[in-house]
Length: 315
Ligand code: NDP
Ligand code: OXD
Image (cartoon, rainbow, N blue to C red; front, side, top):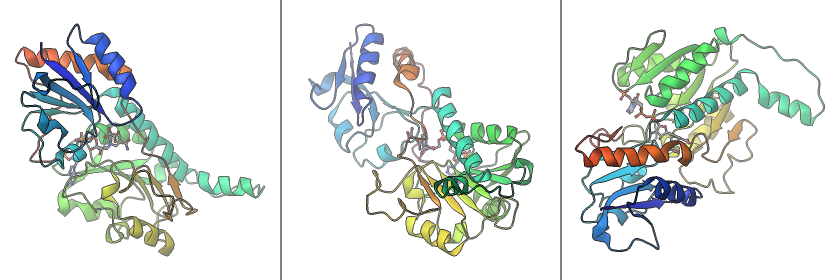
């Protein structure tokens, strides 16, 4: 029976291995880098951030299952085999990402960084607080995660709009799309949440010119950025410039062009920047391992994999 290769860069490799082996019903699961065995046995590769060139070593590879939502790193592998690539679009990951968006929208809305600073100084002062219904949140990316986040933030009462590549019709959500719709979307958004994939079209999108177009004179008291997508979408020097000139009042950044964020980055110590270590959402292996094996079994019966990406589109 054809074997599964597991190639996971990160601390979850051991947990994935144990779970996939338990569920694989006799099919071999081999672990990169030390236990690959005969390369021609490998038919399926379950991967997270595998090194470029690795997947080209398996002449009988039939499919790749990306153990995360974003496939940008895979797609920059010039030697990537031309087999279907499935990605994670699963309620466990969607809910984790939604929690992150809700947490950081509320953090900026409720001025938590100001209260943290006041606490350090033992200052007891109540600052003006608008209602959520007065504040406009803009979600870039209306995919699996963006739509769930928009719905959760909308249920808290915020004025929510979303922006996507192609037109999206979502009941109760104001929507914009494409380059033509971007300026109007930015002009009404005070808290901008980025949940876009990294593609050649989105790289560098979060730059100074874009940040200056956000609504600064609304109830939120300034414009805020939350990027939980990919670091390559943001121009870090431009975010610092926008914060320093006031076109941004605060930023939450989960992702960076270089990860881990170098200790020398001025973002670490900027008083208006909140940093998390690319942990907005990870799929829990225990939530997805059954699905991986079930997909492989269905694929072997001639059925398609779930959530196959479109290479031409880049996501
Ligand atoms: P989806 O593929 O479901 O959705 C992508 C959305 O982005 C779609 O609405 C799409 O538009 C839109 N989009 C793509 N390109 C453009 C463009 N050029 N202009 C405007 N809109 C565009 O992705 P998910 O919601 O599942 O995930 C989104 C991203 O979140 C992932 O690619 C990943 O990078 C990131 N992520 C980060 C995590 C973290 O821990 N920080 C964890 C999980 C995901 P359309 O609807 O028209 O196709
Ligand atoms: C993902 C991620 O894309 O964790 O799933 O960044």
